[in-house]
Length: 546
Image 1 (cartoon, rainbow, N blue to C red):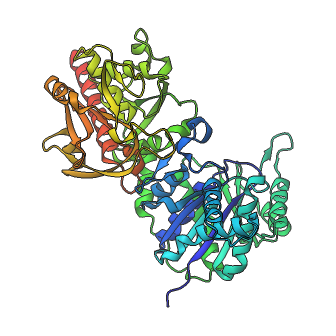
Image 2: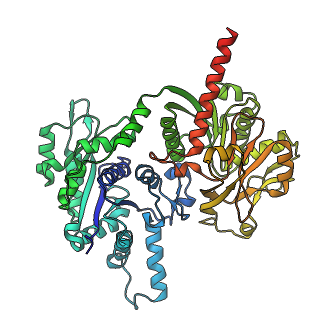
Image 3: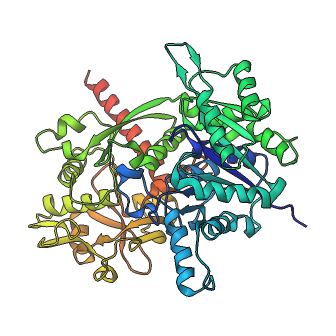
């Protein structure tokens, strides 16, 4: 009989944004490196059904899985660390929980009972927590509880965890992540916030098994002893999580703190084999010891909150390491780019990426950036709306199409080179109505896209409603913008590229969602590689002139 699945619950205290997702992903990576099958799930306490309709300023990037789930950005960390796809089951919100319970109540599933937070909401939370563990595919399921202990909206989740601790007995444990702040005036680290946070958890009936302490300075043995004493935790289970140079250092730091060993000992699982992290350490070496450096512009409308483009930023780190190149990512607000200052904004860039987004704000700036990259032969990558901007710019300035635009941004435009999918024209509810998730794409042989992927068919993740209008396809291709990737069933255009350009690619999908440490996405790898080559050519040309 197979051993029962082990459940690890990760909670947070003192303040938000301490990095529960990174700690969860790092622990999962260490356990995976020891040979265990691990997955991670995120339970978010907000009432939205999913992050799909949330403004990126509210919640950062909306991450999309293969099965079309719009999820929390932490799932991106899970995939990047584990190199395993997540799914709808890996992210659950309060909105989804309550929707399910209300649907059951309307169907009469509760047989006339009064529906309450306990037991009905907590039972639904517990059911969702155990879905992945019940598949038989995993040895360990790590569940990250969003928010901070003490938040009113997190209480049902904390109560569900309390109940599961009793039901699962030795097959569950709780890791509590807190902050140990440094008071500069006193010149010392203070443990009181952590003590109060653990007390809050204890008042909800949960004794944490492990304490992970975020800190700017190393924890002394005295501080560890004090935390162990006042928080009812073994001293070796007080884990230091010091500020790291990159998030990818955290698994190594957690290994040094023996977090994985503490967890395995708690579950009475073998600890003998050391984690196999050779490739991970090689990746870190390349990140920290690059041979080249590039300045790449990320042109977007949400650049004030960098988490809005989290997967793109991380994909550049992966691709940079593959090319042994440091990427100096320049965050350029598209609203700031005008025709008369575009050279000032982008003239020093080695490559330009126009980012995804929704809505008309900042569009003209994106079009100016595309034109500058096209005319000045600067390596270019346009993603989703960035690809659509490349199409609009080409239609306006090369094909000279009058009033050329996207139907999303100007419904009255005479030449809608980007238009709504036919099946979406009568849909008014914006929640979850887009082309979402993984779709196939056929690639034209001999194209730049074929060189990038080394394959004639790929699968990529989508999140959009509007598409290239195929009525204009012949005009575009005759003028030099070629559709080199198309959906095999609908013939919708997925990839466009320019003939007379060193490297100019626009993609309707989101390649950044599939980039991981173990498998950097080929589009980003080739994009960075093209920029390195162009930089070398420029340096050679300048040397020849001298």
